[in-house]
Amino acid sequence: MLKYKVGGKKFAAEKARSNMFEKALELIKQYETIIIHRHSNPDGDALGSQIGLRALINENFPEKKVYIVGDRTVRYAFMEGWEPDIIHDEAYRDALAVVLDTSAKFMISDERYSTAAATLRFDHHIYCEDICDTDVIDSTFESCCGLLTQFALDTGLRLNRLAAKSLFTGMVTDSGRFRYDSANSRTFRLAAALTEQDFDPNDVYCALYADDYKNVKLRAEYTLKINFAGDGVAYIYTSRQQLDDIIKEYDTDSFAISRGMVGTMADIRGVDSWVNFTETDRGVLCELRSKRYNINPIAVKYGGGGHAKASGATAPDRQTAMNMIEDIKTLHRGE
Image (cartoon, rainbow, N blue to C red; front, side, top):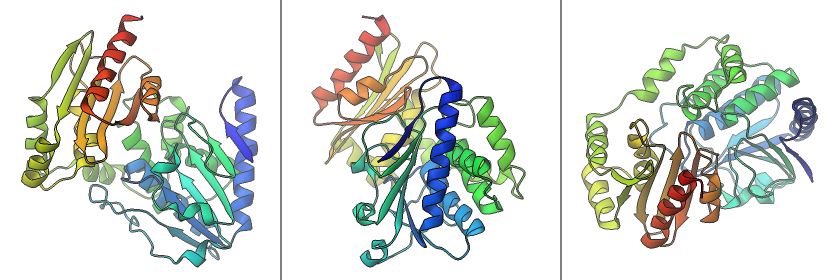
């Protein structure tokens, strides 16, 4: 297996990344059929990297057959080219499967990736487990789209409008409009390179942040549900019955509640870490966020993962979920 995970001195890490970029490019050149996967319940980075990589390959290797697969989206349906392809199992026989923006196997949308002739992963999450034959994992990037942009620039691949717009969209969403501390000077250099292509970033912002009144109302309701646990920790807990009522009234889903409402606690003065708990038939979805602390080990403790300051997990019951709050308070106290 060929693996690249960032680490060590800056020069050594950049050299290792450059070598793995070349290995990844060789794989892309080798296979005539390429099938691109990402995690289920896709966000802008998952879809942006998926659409962007397909556009990048189509631009540089027009003779190849490139497909994207996975579950559908409503929230990001404004993104050009997001519709998944319907392909038969036989397509994987002599294909390269590329997995994007995914740290754990159970998160991959469409398990058929493992039946491909070869597998390749690009990811920016903290390493969780081996998934593919060749892994390019660098958690210093704010987004998988940023990692793929660096891949394109370092290997001399031509960007086109669709590739650039899609990759830019993913960078914007995963960096919180360049607000999160994962954004750095490299982030802005890569974003600048993408905006040299012929698209209007304002179109991206307008589509991303326009919202329906019902969703504005829902966020207001969730603001009133915030609990303060002390030691700079806040949380929201939505029971299964409450979730069913909300889904019925607002025509939404559990993922939109779990991931979408966690941000209501983000900008409260005195709150450094916060969690949105959502009961579902699969367990309690736990979205953990922090301004100052590495909460990833706590997510990992409960079977999850993600980034240092933005992670997730699924707990079997409410009591287990609420134990996270005590763990985060302990982290804040430095105990």
